[in-house]
Amino acid sequence: MKKFRAMHYLKRIALMVFIVTAFVSCSNDDDFLEKNAINQNSGNSSDGSSTGQGTGNQSNNPIGNDGEITLYKVSGDVITKIQDYQVNGQNLAFQQDIAKHNEIWELVKKIVPISYRTKMSEFLIYSGSANQTAGFVVQTKQDLSEWKMGIAIDYAYQGAFNEGGELAYTVIHEFGHMLTLNNSQLDSSISEASCTNYFPGEGCAKEAAYINKLQRSFWADIWSQYQQAQVSQSAMQGFYTTYNSRFVTQYASTNPGEDIAEVFAVFVTRAGGVNGSSKAEQKIQLMYDHPELVALRNYIRGNISSRSLKGSFVLPAPGSWKQANRIGNPYKKCGH
Image (cartoon, rainbow, N blue to C red):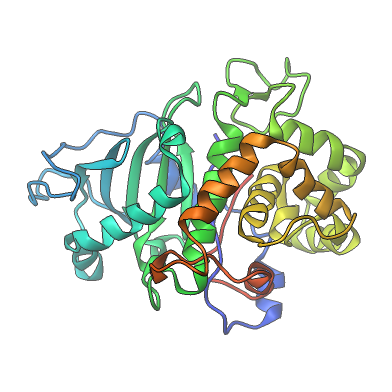
């Protein structure tokens, strides 16, 4: 089972720190999502409402050892508390600040249309400091029909809420994973050995799947070089250096799953269209070739933009994701 997390923040770490850490294995973070994956609702539920108010009694709830703070059920526009985790200190303050939970959820709603929220069954507020992540998505059903999204509340409120549009970019990136890996795109019943298309890990990509088109058009010819580069961080750095014109960000070179999520995020946040004919720009054109993705872009940009009257819903300035990806970040995104 693959897991995905997101990205960007601290802007005062040296470039060399990023280069060393950009391709570090995410295996140390696996416990967090393994405990939050398929059929995870083992704790006691609490009666709640869209404002997230529950019993407030933590005595019978699981301990949030991996940063979990509050888990919600998603029903269209409404989130209803499933459980609070046993936490203390700053995480307890975050747990009790329901207004912050709702502010994050309002941003998610601005990005993920209700038609796609039918595939989002759960929403987790957690602390990213436990595993140095800013967000993730993970399937909650083996058939990939339902997903959980987690957002790190300490990341969301490090500085002003959604400062520079970075949180919005993170949510868009994570939505990109859910969009390209759900059951309309992949068939989880087909094993890798039986798959004749690209196999991201969750299942076999369908012929018309976005990720299958991207892998076939832009990765197949360098696949052997990519596989050889998996042996070390320095090899992955060399892989990116050689093929950087193919990628919208350095993180996109991690694997096709992160590539398509980054392409989708740039496609949405960039004000203009395709800039040139590089492989990276051709990937963005792939997004424009699908009317339903253009409609998603218009939905998101219509809800959150630099001209929005609601300042908390701004998008990052064009090109800012490149700067964020060049500089080390304790809130990393990890993927395939």
